[in-house]
Image (cartoon, protein in one colour):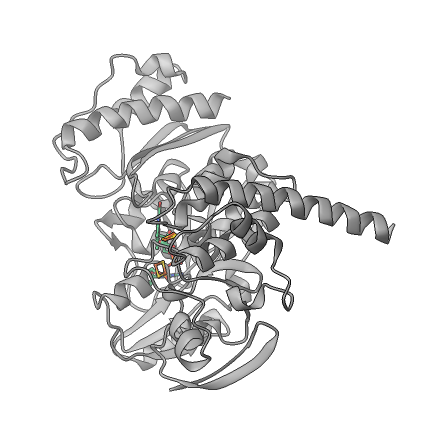
Length: 166
Length: 266
Ligand SMILES: Cc1cc2nc3c(=O)[nH]c(=O)nc-3n(C[C@H](O)[C@H](O)[C@H](O)COP(=O)(O)OP(=O)(O)OC[C@H]3O[C@@H](n4cnc5c(N)ncnc54)[C@H](O)[C@@H]3O)c2cc1C
Ligand code: FES
Ligand code: FES
């Protein structure tokens, strides 16, 4: 057993886990955060994507012990109370989901992608960057639309903030 | 996954200590190969020694013509480093095409080289750049390091700490990615340095990464895609699997080499 501690969605958590416990199982079974999904056994589908120290990672391929000491954000940590995060809002607006199984991972991947491309995104980049996320329902079209729309909204909001600050 | 005991190493010597204490320990760096293998029980080490938090194993340095990359440096860090982009854009391109963004945030150059997957990207770069693989014990040129399928010159309790190479005059990498996994179905790294042209092929050889004499001879005459017109490489020692036949891969070697040269000259 290992004693792990981390900050999850802004809250300090700690506990004893078997060393073989995957981060995704720690989140789902120990912390009850079932928004993060497991969609495959091969580390390929991305349903399990969370942010660790600000970067998108596959929580099914990281031990909770490896993640100890880090800061984790899951899909549950994105919205600001009742206000959806702009990426969540864009997925809703553009029908970026059908069954919704891949959606938490898609949204965590998308927020990471937008963060890494402050210069803005184009369709080819979004499609290439979604390499690690598989969707069995949508055919990706509306997911790509949602990510592009969210990236634009967030760039505008960012500029607004910068103007206010200046 | 079978039970295992996790140890976080604070330094290289600390990691060696942990390795020596156990009969069945494995190093874990990014874990993007090892953890999936443990999940499917293909690997079941009793002890895991985590290298990800060792400061001396992380980071990139370019001094004069020498590039040094710490073994625990992630693919994403290599892909986005401005100094690498200037010194060896082919390596930035290679790193930014490994797997997907999430894998690149965790996976490391040391882990990729130690694993020596016959379809991995980095081994081709190391071989073509004539890189030196630095461990806690010695320095080995890439040509003597990669031994075969998943086999390297690494001995027990040996840890890759860094890789280093001389900035090439020109270099390019192109792979034909497997549409599902993104691993190279064939990838070619070409580098033109002061000692001539080197071309390394991954994803195709039955025995893992190798240098192609045919490609090197043609490009040594003229470092242009046209020099590869009509060149063929033998398919004898190439892989046949569900993805492609040896003959198909032999053709891909030449096609990828041409594209790599176009990139190198761009
Ligand atoms: C979905 C997916 C897609 C991928 N696509 C690609 C791809 O397109 N191209 C590609 O090249 N790779 C690909 N990979 C593999 C990825 O690049 C891995 O990150 C890499 O092969 C291993 O690096 P790691 O740091 O994750 O190593 P780990 O998984 O931590 O370790 C791998 C092996 O190396 C040993 N090891 C690790 N570090 C050291 C060290 N410093 N010294 C000695 N031994 C060490 C470990 O003991 C273990 O045996 C993919 C992986 C996944 C999950
Ligand atoms: S559950 Fe499929 S990649 Fe993590
Ligand atoms: S919406 Fe069903 S898997 Fe993507």
